[in-house]
Length: 432
Image (cartoon, rainbow, N blue to C red; front, top):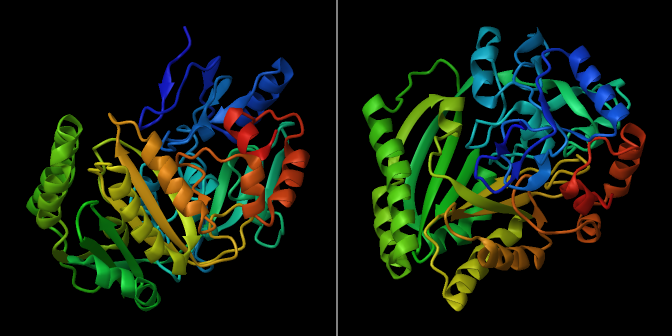
């Protein structure tokens, strides 16, 4: 009987022809060659944390959980090569013996490193790019079963990194790391109008800045993280503080408010005002990865859009007006972040400093009308959707947003001319 698979949010399900769990690169080659000879498509699925169907695998599903750990490390150059199935939350302990850390992280660390890189996952901080910008080397098995290696000097590395799973099965990635560092965190509620007026300027002044906004309120919950050399005296959250703040308030409160809001939509504005008053007011310091990431136990659907950084405050105002105009009741907060411009072909930050708006909907609620309205606002400001989040754009629209799209398609034709790694999502966004 075929194994049933679903992604984290439950928005995508599949019953693959078979699931294969290679533990070596040679076994990955065997999986690809066999599937190609059978005329069956292949798709690695990572941790299933994409909300879009980018990892939908009705053919051969490749589970890379057996392909993990450090391949080699160069302490002098601060570079570490990891196997593709290594989870983000495992990487800090793997880098610790070398005195290294990843330069930046998002707020969720359940993904595999290859999945996070391939979909353009990012954190916040205007001096830092997405996780993919940390990649200086990559190995993958292409559609013919050939192992391809890309080094820092190869121009095509910029095309292969954010590869959407369309170019092959990634087996190894080399990361440019940094010396281990600590973060000093300040989380506090601030008046939303003031945050919007100063956000772009503050992004240029702070190492890492983001804010959350509960619809139907006029408060921004800001998070400011300042980098410190590793080894200073830390003031970490105690186990009790984490239990109260993250488990009881953040996850427990979100679960309660989302469920109550679903049953009684008219109560959502009042609930959001209460939620805003209970969370987001603390200061602490800890190792970088313990500050960047948070626990997310309440399941949700998500769409996320990258716009030019300067447009982000206007986008927030237009979303707030849209929610009021449509009479929506939105219990889940929106998240606003920033990232540096980069030169990766299919990065959402390609060629421009980018602001990000992520909208969420409780998993038991339909996101369709809300997400379409957010989409329309983002597109009016040259928005690009996160590849791993929910969106309905087609190739024609996306090609106009990515100057290097044609180059990426040419690389795909070289590496996977028979579309061994294709699925319906890739057919829509890449036109084939």
